[in-house]
Length: 611
Image (tube, rainbow, N blue to C red; front, side):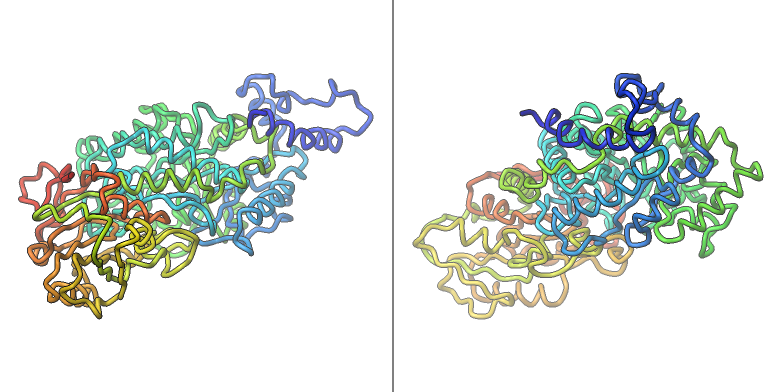
């Protein structure tokens, strides 16, 4: 049985139940269906009919998104909430795919219990796999996918993520990030596919993977192009800072990936926290309404970032003026995680006093409801549990392993030390990132900022190395390198950054390896054996001073749960084909450094060796 048919059969009872509630059990089926409930009618017709039946409170509820920890199912019903989200690390207990599906269905039933039975849409940051869910497949972060140079592979990853997301009920993904990261000091650099607009634009194939060829098909998940616009161009890489560019520069560097996303039919766009020449994007009507919706022809809906409207005036706590500025700028749905009741009260007052027109409210609702109809939520509102077993499944993990191997960038290989022979002798492995799923997965993994250790099932890089070698090869591991001597044929040091996400990830004073990593590398080097450095990081690091002491350097980026993909390249099962999507600095003083700016890099964008 195909997935579409199975979904329709598994959910068929839900609309019939609702119709019974709405018009009574004795009415004939033909009389039961109001125009907006009739899937045979065109979506615009259904939207217009539903809008004509909605009260102001119902319309304002559709424009409001609350965090799951701050809104009960009863709240969803009482306040007609249009959307719920999970912030980074916000999960049901236990944190399993089945628990997520149960939570989603409970909230969805609450939405369906409203007089018009308008389903809610549930949003998550599934930015490199369904990363809030323990046991999900964690793919390489975007910087690694950018290094693959393979839009078709990225589309396959989007499809896999959509299946895992669908298996938990969730129907809206706050991805992909289409930022063009221009300063590696920025803590979100790893969320960028590349430093020039051509790479993120090419990788918008992930949108087709997430949504399918059309919304509403099997495991179709609404994608989000974020963060509009210029978040990767802030001065000194300051997260949520100011992008100081002319309009021509903004358009040439930061707009093309969004143009590509709109061309692919992306369902939603999220606004950036950052400013453009001192003006917060969340209040910028020209860029949101005139450029995005008008010039680019974006027909989906615009969502704010987490409490983003609160930043328009620079003061803590959102005001009526900020609510009005954001809605009139063109934001259709507002992410107000905890203060959503205050937001609803304020929004209603601003509409009633005429500062926000009913036409603007209707436009926002039309955009939101269109996507809900297109997703098929009115016909199939509950979790399709045929996809639940795909969460962390073997097929998706195999795809992730392939993506890891394709993302590796070989930056140095003196004397052809790589690939290592699988058989014979002893290999020493060291470094704190060698046997740590949390470190190799980076931020946005189970929790917002990421974590250390076995935070979710997977294969560490060390485990991948052990599995790759032949029976006659001994692999010895010590995190600090203690115990190495000249009898080993090679030493592999897996070093780099520990996890971080936005804000905490900004680095302005140092971008080199820390004291522990340098001490480990020094211990290995003194043994007199070839040293192969595997760099686990969310961006290029300042390693020019140490590079002469290393025989090989492999940029592994943040590979996720399938560390065997790194070993595949180290031992030659897969030849390295990755190319660095970022220019590699010779020193921190060069930041920002980008292709075409005339600065001499350690490695130029597009560099990568092979065997």
